[in-house]
Length: 289
Image (cartoon, rainbow, N blue to C red; front, side):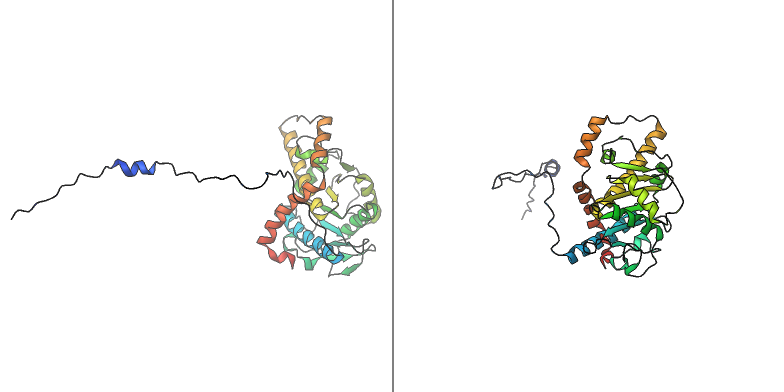
């Protein structure tokens, strides 16, 4: 009996390699139903239905703003304050208590302060400079909801010149002809009289540079005010870097004014802040407690 062995042709070694290099088949794309639409901006945010809801909204934005300022490095010692006007008692405002680090701020930490500088709700102490500056600004500018001031590094550095910023970049055009300069320095601001003088230098603008002191922003919402502060600090940094490198070339007036009209409104600032707010709350939900 003979043993018959079958011989099979060896498999081609090129096949697996060829299969590896084959392009995957593209998914079949069908035309979506309905008419294509164009959306160049965000959907409008509905107003809060009650004064209590609006108060809570401002408190949450305010507490988060402090934590974001800490992330950006705007927390220097005991200096710095952001305020939000109360929607019901409009001569009162919410502010951070003296000595609580920005990175630890919660809604429950905030103080409600009246126009006499007295704490109506919350536990102090109250930063006297915060009251002296912000009480005057909230009185002089009934159109604003919030004001922000810290001793951020590049804002302080630019403030030593006592000059307005130039329109050097698209981003800095947010402040083109929309910020003032307070040209005096009298030490720590402890009296509302100086707060009113700062208000005069601010005028109808969104920001003011305080000579030898720092920068300050105001706005129709906590979100816009906080984002404009971040943007103003960035504009100071850019101008300092540009001038250190050489002679920067400003944007011509007509184009700077046009750009300001395009990007200087509060809507863009509010949505820019919201993107940071959403990340912060997801990462540090206790800020809302």
